[in-house]
Length: 136
Image (cartoon, rainbow, N blue to C red):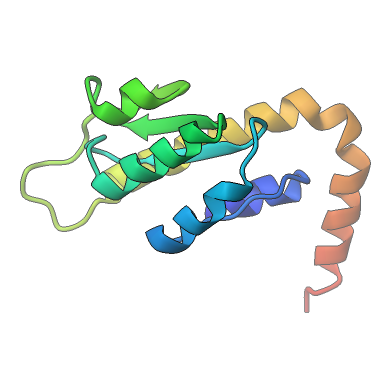
């Protein structure tokens, strides 16, 4: 959700769909210019793999964020971003892996911002001013 919000502020049509069925229903509207960011620590999550395949069938791009170097997801992806295996076998929550994923999404956001910032600065300022008006 954080990544979707950030990329939307750069002018990209971006959404995070938490339901796999709903996400699958949007794939017919993808184009070769579309990008799907697939996040799976194991790289073997069935639903994520199925969505990635639907995306590939539309000639859209798949960016994989995973810690599984030899996973099916990594092999399917156009861009592979590997994270370190930071979770233990017994864990209370996936805090470390979630923070790693958020850092990678932030790095993607900053990279895209810097590549396109010349023509986005005025819109970015305008969006910031609109948001500031809601502060109390």
